[in-house]
Amino acid sequence: MGLVRFENVGLRYGSGPEVLHDIDLVLDPGSYHFLLGPSGAGKSSLLSLLYLARRPTRGMVSMFERDVTSAPRDTLPELRRRIGVVFQDYHLLDHLTAFDNVALPLRVAGVPAQRIRSEVMELLDWVGLGDKMDVEPPFMSGGEKQRVAVARAVIGQPDLLLADEPTGNLDAAMAERLMRLFEQLNRMGTTLFIATHDTSLPRRFAHPVLRLENGHLMADR
Amino acid sequence: MVLRLRNGDVPLASDSSTRFVPWIIGTMVFLSALVLAVALVLESAIDRWQLAHSVQLTVEVPPSADQAALERVLATLRAVPGVVEAAPVGQQRIAELLQPWIGDDLELSNLPLPVLIDVRLATPGALDIAAMQAILGEVQAGVRVDDGRRWLEPVRATASALQVVSGLVLVLIVAASIITVIFMTRTGLAVHRDTIGVLHQVGARDSFVAGQFQRHAFRLALWGGVPGALLAALCLVVIERLAGGLDAPLLPELALGGGGWIAIAVLPLVAAVISVATARLTVLATLAGLP
Image 1 (cartoon, rainbow over the protein chains, first blue to last red):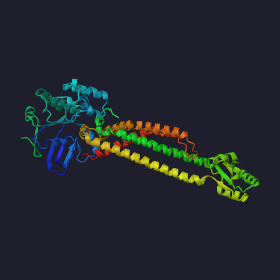
Image 2: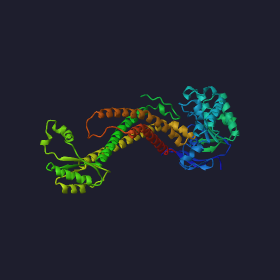
Image 3: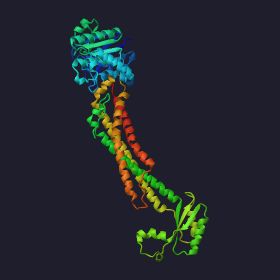
């Protein structure tokens, strides 16, 4: 059984049309996949199922060897803590500093303050924001926000890291550095699933590519 | 009143929609304190009236009775077990009692007044009033035993009704406060939907989100409740001072005991606990509807 397993999954919003059709997907532990597809193909919808913000309207979703299709709500937070997500629009909390944004996953997990402090400072230093710990997102550039978002996604050493256009707002050097970090995390056992428009990424980093078109998922040939 | 509260992970302290809440909670606590004071004063008055009239009664000997008949009545009363004292009320005391109605310039001896005998009992209910009435009626026709029930019962019924009304007003105040907190919490949940989404995404439990709202509700309730209780205490002290100068023996003593003051001091905390519980239940019930 894979780390993530989708069987015949369909998703619709309310009574609208189905946006994902018959998705079958297996992500093995330690795997690394790119997800390509045009805007509106359903990449964000698929990611929302993966980070457990939604449940499928049909089919079966299993995460970390647990069927989450109809699992009780109170079992989901533990699973979400094993998933890091880098959103295209960052999803940072504007009223919190960079430090507090990155610390959030550890704080909700009840990690002691001393450990939070040392780990967050180390990670912010690593992404080059050691001098911006007390700065709030509205006063940061797009690239800086992206780095805070990445730091928040990886601070909890997730088993599964999802990213939606992670390099979209970064300069070439920082994008390269970020992709190297992802490689490093993958070598340490983290499963990666990266949705992107950038077709150069799969060429530069040799990992399997999945393609999503009109809500149908297929392996890239 | 301008709030300067620190934001938590959900920036509730910045919500302008919650700035009116301390005013509402403060008003509710103020009204609750006054209603509670009324209920407690009535309770204490009823207890005092009941205690006084359960060990005290008055025997009226008709004006037609002579001194010998009066002596027989007194002797009969003093021989009854449970009677501690039986003594005629002096003319001077009767004159004082009648003075407000008939003035100073009337000669009492010209009036056909009954002789009143104050009877003090050892313990409440030590005497069967009906049996006593029958015995004294045989000693002297027209003797009447008055244990105060004639006027005490209606007064007690009225006071009890007022207490029930006070209780209902308190229930309404609590209900209005709960509705206010529910409204505030639901508004907060709607305004901060995205923030709560992020918290859920990083693994926060519903109880973590509820905790944010609970802390905010607690601070707002105390922020309004403490001044509300202080203002009510000030009003009660003024009323107590003014009532101290009244010459109205039938009115209950308008003073709160130590227990009453403690109850009023605790009201802001009670308001805070109700607000916290309401916020928590509202958040958990609302979030339970999410995927």
